[in-house]
Length: 283
Image 1 (cartoon, rainbow, N blue to C red):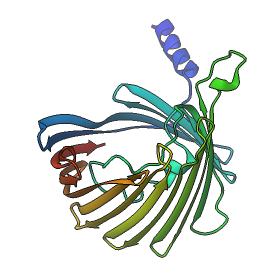
Image 2: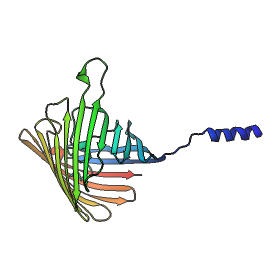
Image 3: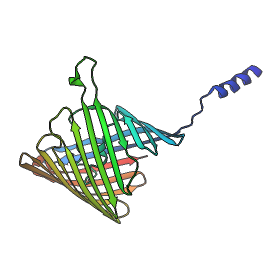
Image 4: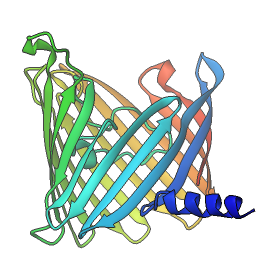
């Protein structure tokens, strides 16, 4: 018996001390889609599980997370202090993506709200500068493709991005740019939003978004009626002077962590016209 007690005490002493606070979060989203001439189908909008750990060390806050999103695993670690915040990881982030999608209010997104880079980025490093002016956020990032040690720089592609966001009295103005070694053009983003109580409206523009001479503008607005939102979003894509537009109308209703919505989409082609019913739950 004494040996058993001694072994139990030794195991407790030898056990590592966990200084970090660990949380488990996630969300799931399922949709029923019906488009003209295409019948009814189902899809998964999201299915994520994220484990997050946070601790304080010498005045520096360290946060790390691992996210499993429908079988794909990514993560990042952030160091925050008087120097601002430095984030590094394989998750899909860069400076411009922290300020875009201002007009993306539709529950089932129309698909063209975010500014993109051509290079598939394996690792990203982003620095959010310390606040020097109230309401102003400045970010810079550098991202790297998965290279090969073949004494050639052709595979070692770097993507740099810069972003600014300024908020005052309900107004927010944002700007972001992306410089990708793999392309000769430079995607940029500008956006403006206004919030007044339950009302939110936003307008945004991207140039060279995803391809050269492809410009996308979007206008979105939503009203929070207490249990959910009534929203409308419209996007226009201009590719070398040829324009296509899509508009979404919808209403959502929340029950605890659950969100149920119905959305109608109209567009220039039959494939862009339809309706969506979605259910999502976050925990």
